[in-house]
Image 1 (cartoon, one colour):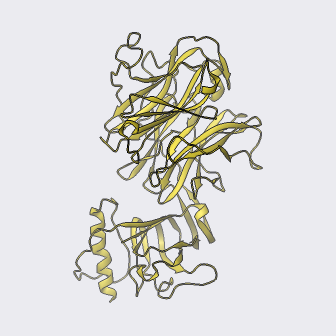
Image 2 (cartoon, rainbow, N blue to C red; image 1 turned 90 degrees about the horizontal axis):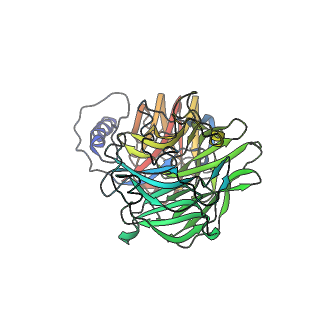
Length: 498
């Protein structure tokens, strides 16, 4: 019996390497390998993912939160200001990968000289001195970018330009774009939110919403959300609901608000989600944020700006329901500014779109500034203007739990969908999984740590089996908790597959 199980796991590993769901090889180390042939099972269906993020964990022993800092590749910066209509640099923007044609598409803000009537002080700089525009670039690989000659606006002043949106304003900022796969109307396939300060109509001040069939021709919907600049639009791809992360001030501190909508027309009243607390100080500001899903959990990148040091960095945050958000207990800085004089030495500002999976790595495109925030008041360094950069993290390996010596942790209860259990982990010793009942119920019979076949090594997808059970089908519909135990384990997530 043990010999057959061993061979079953080995052949399942070969099958997993070919499955589109994963690119990593499945492996599980047990003693006394056998060469008995077992027919492979058909490809599976993902039933449930469990991310081992801090708010998904209950009891722990010799176990700590684990965060992986984002890695900055040497290709940075990917795109710098080169055109006469990009005076202020390549600023706030969204990089998406279209589900329609597979292209990487970049929507960004910039400006060029063109004084309008009047001016408004926004933060440290006087706005109204330039024409603010939104531009479009595209790429086949996400690394080499081109500006298509669109000539939709300002064609006489700037022949062959890539400007896609202009709106007479003191200040337009942070164009945030999504490709809406839930939308049935092809004329509203793309959606954009952009902050706007109107020189004539104060009722238009705030975050204006636009729609487009192709991401190039935009129509204003007439909806304006109440906010200051530095905002972000996100859509939950599972439900289709839209979320607007907005900025306002609590006292003198920039803080974050949330509004949501099911139809992109009727929006909830904004509510605070991030304001300074007892762990912050008077210089703490929450500048912007973005959101994304990872292993069934909603995470986000929160921009912090410290007025006292003029430093800007990115923290990892999470939410269980997309509405109540929390910072991680250790407030990990997963993306920090670079060394003095580098392209992002002044600040690493969040990109306004989700990380994009390319191969076995996620790419997160962000807004990089060589000048600190207050440099806008004096004009900054004209030779090193803001640019597009990116940072990476391994597939599904951004946050997890780490044991030292013999440690353990247990997840929150969830309803078991059945299926086979796979684990994403690194372990130098042996790892076992037991399935616990909620509360004080103890382990389910035949699913104890003693019943579990130990695994070890570095695997993004390693199957977990027990001596008398190869799946969790016997527990389907019941509330369960996963208990991961082992020596020197880094565990990121679990998946249940049919």
